[in-house]
Image (cartoon, rainbow, N blue to C red; front, side):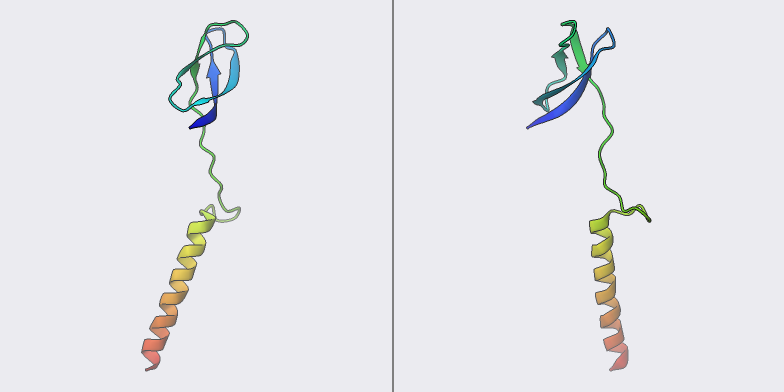
Length: 77
């Protein structure tokens, strides 16, 4: 799978390349030296107020509401 990765050579040139995920070294376009792939921060989308993952939080709320509804049904019988 091809993705964008950042690479840095020994001359501190940083560039971005669209390469296969297995590629660890890419030539620097400025000086031609081998450039090593940098470790980048993962992108994570969090909910603005609580910091929870939106999909998981909604799923948890839905399951909790269903469980409460079933418990109320049982206690009313």
